Image 1 (tube, rainbow, N blue to C red):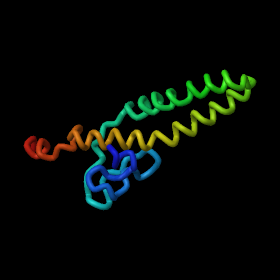
Image 2 (cartoon, one colour; image 1 turned 60 degrees about the horizontal axis):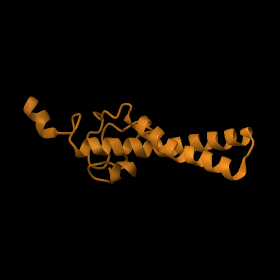
Image 3 (spheres, rainbow, N blue to C red; image 1 turned 180 degrees about the vertical axis):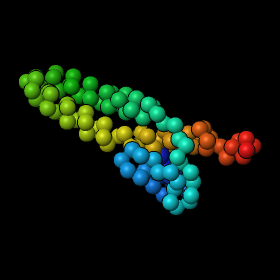
Amino acid sequence: MARGIAQKCPACGKGHMFRSFLKVADTCKHCGEELHHHRADDAPPYFTMFIVGHIVVPGVLVMEKLWHPPLAVHFSVWTIATLALTFALMPAVKGAIVGLQWALKMHGFDYAARREGE
């Protein structure tokens, strides 16, 4: 999972996991590990919302309690903070999910089981 958070190949830790912002590469260019059969689906957005919500909501409450800013300030600050955190965390969270699937040999990462089925 740590290699996934770093957006590196879960097998070798050197090649890039993504070919674009959130598009997982078909294979690792360094070691040739096939990554195309991952099934991250809705887990990365869910976990990202969970993390961002646990950062933003306390921030809103603390800011309101300490400074009582106008609603427009809250809207500006927390909209930007929410978007920035979401875009910053989403690739790392998706990488961690793909890394976990690789480590647990889920969704086609178990080559021994695939060979037996052939």
